[in-house]
Length: 337
Image (tube, helix red, strand yellow):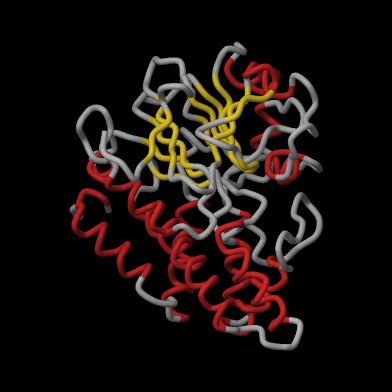
């Protein structure tokens, strides 16, 4: 599809995704089409699990090398994605043009939904109205407009650039508000997970909400490249390649890649996972999930690099055949370099 469109077309599509609440038919068709794209990804980079379905690991370790852009938690910041597309790499090319030419890979680390600290007061106001029975208050509608705009952008970009744009599942990808199999309801400033689920049921109905749950279950959980490994959260323990491919069939793997708190991972889990995937332990492991001050934070002796700062629109740029250096390779997409 990318061969038939221009950068102007891409930005027009993003504008349409963000202009208002998606109509029911549009949301339904976008979700359904994205599920088909995810289910049909090439086995060359997304090996099948034991059931014959697309596995939970993106494996680009043997693929053609090209620049990789790692995008931390979005949390309803759809403007982050638009700024990313406009971002100019040191080579002088904009990300959108490189995507159209299939000369860059973008991996988002998950957590598309739920504004957090930047919308704390809005969540509190929405919660007090929610417990009084108002599911779709103006505060909740403002929150969900951002969330749905972000996820419509994510799904549209996945459809446009299926081999080059990827989105990993985070702990906030739980539209069904489930408890179990690695999913837990999210509560921080309010009952965000429950409130989101109830709003979506009221606004769009159970069929679409169920389909969005299927979309989330179709997402990969980890990615490996020649010089780095990615997942939403710090790996809770050392995972093998087979365990990552079959993550949804093995208890503890989904939660162990999406919910790990600082200090909860087994020592050596990062080094062990990298070695299992690449045969060596000197590649970077990059994740989001936990908030950092500044551009990054290091854990496990510097082997695990966290890059999620909700007050910035920072991305990690991993160049082919180069070791990732967080001191020099993290950029703000709100600036031109």
